[in-house]
Amino acid sequence: MTKKIDTDSSRFELLTRLGDNVLIMGHRLSEWSGDAPTLEEDMALSNIALDLIGQARLWLTAAVMEEGAGRTEDDLAYQRDVRDWHNLHLVELPNGDFGRTMLRQYFFDAYHLLLLEGLSKGCDREISGIAAKSLKEVRYHLRHSSGWVVRLGDGTQESHNRMVNALEICTPCVPELFEVDEVYRSLEARDLVPAMNDLQAQWERQVHAVLSEATLSMPEITNPMSGGRVGLHSEHLGYLLAEMQFLQRAYPGATW
Amino acid sequence: MTNAPDQWPLWEVFVRTKRGLNHQHTGSLYAADAKMALENARDLYTRRQEGISIWVVPATDITASSPEDEGSFFEPAEDKVYRHPTFYPVPDGVENL
Image 1 (cartoon, each protein chain N blue to C red):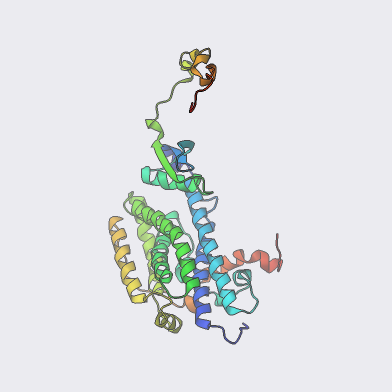
Image 2: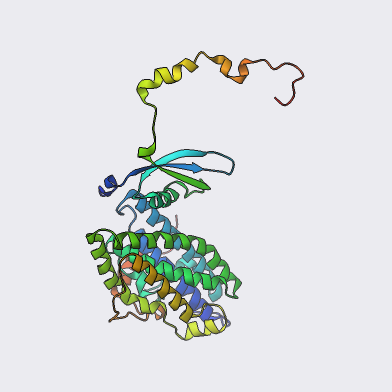
């Protein structure tokens, strides 16, 4: 990767992580288009996917501006291999059934909202601006996904069982949400990002309340995921990228 | 799409496009309850900035006039032209009418 000399690499890294999370999450949700349980839900999921992909454009555009190496948002989206993606494991988890998608989405939305609230109060005007713009959308996402978690958890025996199963699959991805590395520490010190300890405490409190209402509880985490932020991913991301990047890989530079 | 929506009630959706205008019927949808109906309505009918306010009403709560009554309900109005303001000439000199 070529960089200009005075690039703030931790800022570039932050912007890329933020963009990668929402782009992969958005792509995952887009896989439901035309295939959701109801027409109404199909539209809801597609809307949310589009919100997230729109947010990804803002973050990744800011990232390439920071980098100053002449790359574009599309270069980041379509030209990077698995190891260069810095998203969380949670967002690359396959959709599974609708219940699993909703639980994954709820975990992400709750985290995303707190993160954006923190970023919107940060001292970097570009970052706080994008965060503030995204917040309105994400409040709605959270309302949608938390509603479904309660509905399905406290629904029929079948839906409850599926949510228990979804918890088993999604929960190992939770500790990674709050992992702090050197990059994050340096950003915290500069007041660019919210303090991760506080964020985690709030997330756990809120999620606990919603899961209780859904008659569910967090299972014990025995095999936590780690390392998405530095490019270590599950096997699922490669397949996702193969589909998402297919066109630009097959026809480099194609536009329409 | 599965048959799941068949088990959910039907809701009629009314959207107000601008402050000061009336809510207008824009369509219908399936939802398990009022909260879901409102959220679905938001996603289905206001995604291109069509509205600033939404009403959802269970379709079963709407009482409609029946097509057989069309004659007795609506036709008698046809020859009552004097019910239209344009039937009356406005006298000269009347302001603010």
